[in-house]
Length: 155
Ligand SMILES: [Zn+2]
Ligand SMILES: [Zn+2]
Image (tube, rainbow, N blue to C red):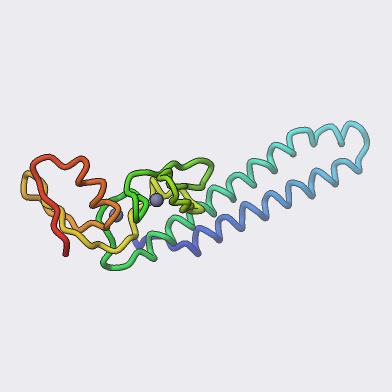
């Protein structure tokens, strides 16, 4: 089975958008009816909201897939993001991420802490057991602060 493409996920999102629009239209039509008919529409604001939520979740999924697909071949091996200059200094809220280091000011329009790192690898990390990984500047900073018994070499 091949990996679903961002386009495929966006297609599903579009179906959820269509459903939301159809539910809203249905609600509008029910309002034209007599009282009894009109009252049956009371669930439909919520239902349309859920369909929009589904679309939003699918759009975010598509964006995440697209970011993963766009990672360069020489990308850092770490499965979470850092600030390229400051390392493990990120805070994510509501789908945006910022660096907390003084004077940095970098922000990203997605949850970078949960996205695989896409920065170019610039260092080789060798851990205490001899395991190796190619990592970026930001992760090298982070690893220097935490690494016990291994070493980090520039490429
Ligand atoms: Zn920073
Ligand atoms: Zn990295």
